[in-house]
Image (cartoon, rainbow, N blue to C red; front, side, top):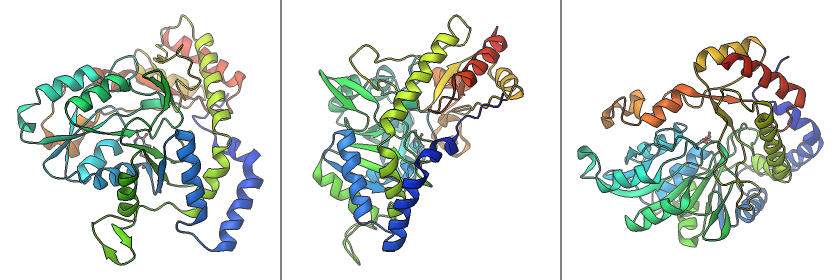
Length: 383
Ligand SMILES: *Cc1c(COP(=O)(O)O)cnc(C)c1O
């Protein structure tokens, strides 16, 4: 049986008519940059995340970059983040001229560890001691929030601004001081990606920054448009980080279905849990389960740990099952960051995760028969 990692055609089918209708409206208007569709999506994403402000941007990467630029982060600054994430997290930091400094992850959730962050902030590696630690950038990896309470406490203590990389976690929930909060709403800025494979994906690149502070929202808005408050008058140097009206119109249609898709992914995760019970594969931990949260995990990826990962992936491939490795090389081991002076062994949990993890198909339209096939093959492969 053939089981793809993701099947966007299955998602598009039932929405085809409506999406083509809104695309026609944008085409007929010939208004492609900004405008009412982008503003409508900004309002809806802000409401969805329960924050007052949202700024549509050209990608998740640009959401991170524009947020850092609006905060004035640059050379001489350090941004503390995780080495076990998609490249854009640290790439956007480096592009401002600031230095990404890493702290290792928790082995159960793969999210950044507040204890490791504290160690780095208390006693940074010597080569980073001249830098000003300005920003903490936690990543809600695979669709589950980091343990934000101790991270926010740490940020207050060390006077760091928090930018959440919530690219994989739109709608993921966390209990903070008795209140249910959504990913992206707990720091000064929350960054989302609408890359097609995210839970809310467009027909190309797109992203959003959500913010609590009106002043910073203006900063990101200006940065998105070459630092111009008024056309041709530039107070700062920004970039072209704008979201297309076509993408916004498509995303508005898809946003209506997002909670159903989250629920279907959750159901699929439950099925895997039953099908793989007692196998040698280590299933994803749901850290915030049982706190009256619906979306304690939105399963952008369903990532298991298996012994002899590459051999297991190859067996699955031969049986028609697509998998992926997120991520095979932690960021402190990337060639482009060699100058940061990190060595193998510096972040043992990130390095172990890079060796052991495998993402299984979890998309909403996956059938029970497909999941049974995946589970049977995986069970035998790790036995
Ligand atoms: C996808 C992703 C990004 C970047 O988003 P793009 O829209 O592809 O630029 C950043 N961080 C994480 C953790 C991601 O998964």
